Amino acid sequence: MNENTANGFISVDPRQNPLREVHNLLLSGVSPRPIALVSTISEDGVDNLAPFSFFNAFGANPPYIAFSPAYSGKDGSAKDTLLNLEKIPECVVHAVPFDLVEQVSLASTAYGPELSEFTKAGFETLNSDAVRPKRVKNSPFHMECEVEQIIPLGGTKGSGNLVLCRVVRFHVSEAVMEDGKMTPDALDLIGRNGFNYYTRASGAALFTVNKPTGQGMGIDQLPELVRESSVLTGNDLGKLGSLETFPNSAEVQNYVSGLKKHAPESKYHKLFLHGLEDMDKNPGQAKRDMEVAAKVALNEGDEKFAIHVLLALAEL
Ligand SMILES: Cc1cc2nc3c(=O)[nH]c(=O)nc-3n(C[C@H](O)[C@H](O)[C@H](O)COP(=O)(O)O)c2cc1C
Image (cartoon, rainbow, N blue to C red; front, side, top):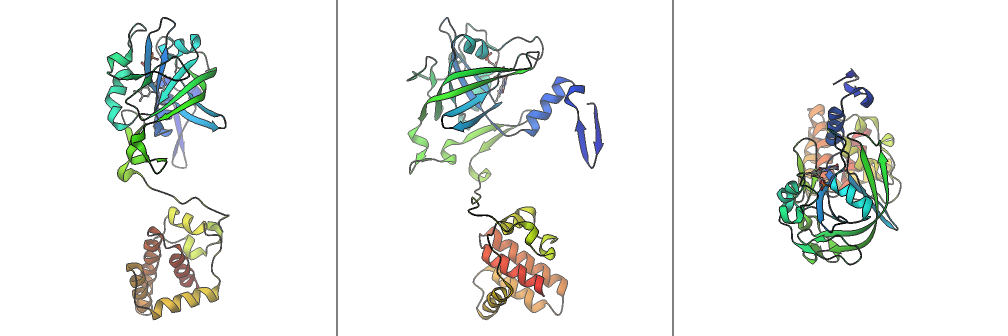
C-alpha cells in the first residue's frame, strides 16, 4: 500500500492506491455493517436475491433506506440487482439473522440472471403487499420499497450505485416481538466486518447505554486527579461527565460521613472504607483502592457513589 505514517497512524490517499486496498480499508473500518438481503424481479419475471452490506437507514418520516450494488472491479459489469431495479424500481429489503448466514452467503454467488437465488439458496417466499418482488419468509424483518433514485458513485469499475428506497410497508415476525418491541436477542442479526469476519448482535455482545437526558457537566469539569486517573477509563469519565450537576464540597463531606458511619452495603463501599483506613499507612494504595471502588460503582450503575467518592478523594 502507498502510505505514510505520522503520530502512530498510517495515512492513505485513496487516489494513489489500488481499489482492493481502498475497498479493504472501508470494509474493515466501517464495520460491523448491517446486511440488506435484497429481493428484486427481472422484466422476465425471474426473482433475484442478493446481500448488500453497504446499507443503512437514513430517515423515518418518510422512512428511507439505501444500499449500494457496485460495478464489478474486474470488468465493470453491473449486478443483476441493479439491472433489475433500472427496469422495475421496486425491491424488498430483509434483515439477516445468524440462522441465515450460510444461505445468504450462497445467495451472494454470481448466478446468471435466468436463475433465482431463492431456489438456489433454498429460501421460502411470501408475496408482497405493495411491490412486485417477493419476500423471504425466513427473515424476521422485511421492508417493501419503492426505489426513488439510483445515484452512480463514479460510474466506473468497482464504483458503487446508491439505491435510495422509500419504505412503503414493514413486516415484522411475531416471533421477535416482546411487549410491542423487537428484541435484539430474538432478532439475532448479523453484521459484516472486513475480510471474512461477521458480527453477531445478540447475547453477550449486547449492552445498553442510558440516553443522556439533559446537558452533562463535561469531563473538563472533573478535578485533574480524576481526569488523570490511571484506574478510570474514557468510558468511566464519560459517565461522570454526563452527570448534570456535581455535588458541592459540603454535600461530598456529608455523603462520605454517611459512608463512614454505616456498615458497608456493597463491595465497593467496603473497598472505599478499606482505602480510607489505609490512607495514613499507604496513601498510594489507598487512593487506588478508592478509585477502584468508584469504578466498580460506575460499572454497577451507582454514579452517585462514584462522583462523591472521587470528589472527596480530590479534596484530600
Ligand atoms: C454479506 C455480504 C455483503 C455484500 N455486500 C455487498 C455490497 O454492499 N455491494 C456489492 O456490490 N456487493 C456486495 N456483496 C456481493 C453481492 O452480494 C454479490 O456480488 C451478488 O452476486 C450480487 O448479486 P446479483 O448479481 O444477483 O445482484 C456482498 C456479499 C455478501 C456475502
